[in-house]
Length: 494
Image (cartoon, rainbow, N blue to C red):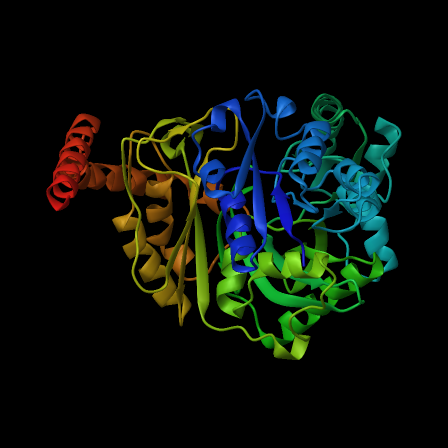
């Protein structure tokens, strides 16, 4: 086992990894930027090192500085979490050069699966179903037109090096195609430094279903069931649940086998996620995420497997905790991403100071967060405040438990996505499991109206609860009084 792990990340995922380290009796090292000097994760770690200015390029994306701190702190492994450098093959290469273990797959695998065209070629070779489309970047507009005609409209134009929905345009007829190709090439060049684009068939009402993969360095690969991630906006996930409401034993067997086939074909190790689009009884490979996912807690809850601890154990040379036959799905879990965003203003970021904070609790409720009362959410990074996760024996019970937990969750000072999540949990189509990746757009009006009602109701509760949040001066006065009392007690004992 490792002696010390540097966590090359911040926020709730940094704390999540550090918790796993603590349970494995491994020391953790935090790196923090100027904006994060008062962050919880920097205080939680066994050791903390300042890495640079607030901008990611000067801190969490600076491989040279990260390696330098890893060597200075004598860390023998690095966990990249998700985001930032988690899918950057250069980090893996630098770790190898300096004799540091990267907790994740090999750099060559990260590189191959990070390219949409290469990954689809590999999946075709592995006999994993892939959406019809080009297997290489298009070389001209005329070629793009011929390809679109051959596979049939609608089609989607994608950036080969893209991610997170950036560089994607849906096209329903030829007149739109030229503009879509040109604009996608421009966005791809600006965002990724690579203008390569490709075309594939666009599925009208797909569901986004993914499978959690775990593979050790002895050649054992398993899946830990499925997650439904269809509630999205601008291709960014907002709510995830496990298992998918449409999942059957037969479908899980077929999709799970395809996911394992995908992983074994590329000699994958550690934790990863194979993502599929499901439509009209068929499923197609979408992409593979070569890291731990934001939504990993719902898989942990329904399978009773600590994925982060398994990541660390596998990187240290251990075999996987269990065989495929040992994996059992128990109950239903839902995760809501609580972001500092204004859902009534197209989810515009709303960083700022948290002036009041009460997290939910009770049976079947888990909160993964990196914030606290009076913490200021910086504007430099992702707007996530926390992940609210619930478990219950059935999906209907899980929805009701999430409603209850959301009602208990109070965050003052910044606008959050809590009203959006409340609106979704109350939506009839969601309750019935009638989901697709366009759900938020299709039901926009109903969701918007429901959010406005929720916000009005929350305002009443907020006013009632304000008295429970002590202003800073009162807290200081009480602390001073307690300190004075304790001092007098100590004096009297002498």
